Amino acid sequence: MSKSAYDFEFTTLKGVTQPLSEFAGRPLLVVNTASKCGFTPQYKGLQKIWSEHRDRGLMVIGVPCNQFGHQEPGSTAEIGAFCEMNYGVDFPLMAKVDVKGETAHPMFKWLAQEGGYFSRPRWNFYKYLIGRNGKLQTWFSSLTSPASPKFDAALKILLR
Picture (tube, rainbow, N blue to C red):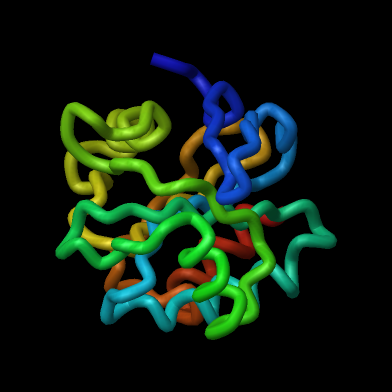
C-alpha cells in the first residue's frame, strides 16, 4: 500500500489524469459525492470551504460514486453541469469511481486501511482530511456536515 495520499491519482471529469503528487505539501479534503442524495446539499458547504481556504493551500476534491443507492447515475458532463449549476462548484471534481469493495479506487482502499474499519464509506459524502504530510488526519461520515462546529474544528487543525 502507498504511504501517502500524494501517491495516488484520479481522472478528472474532463478525462485528464490528476496525480495528487501535484498537491504535495497541501492539505486535502477528499469527499465521495453524489448528485441525487439526501446529503447532496453538502456541496454548498464544501464550496464555501474551498472558497474560504484555497488561498491557504487547501485542496477540496470531489470524487463521485454511484455505489450507494445509484445516486450518481449521470455522465461526467452531467455531473459537472449539475454541480456547477446547482451549487456553484468550482473545486476539482474527479470522474466516477468505486469507493468500497474489491473494485474500490486504490486511494479509498488506503483511506480505509489508514482510518480503520469505520472509516470505510458506507454512504455518499464521507469526508477525509489529509495533512500536509499526506497522512490521513481524520474523517467524518455523511452525517457530519462540512458546516458543523466539529468539522470546522478539525479543519482549523488541518490548516495550521
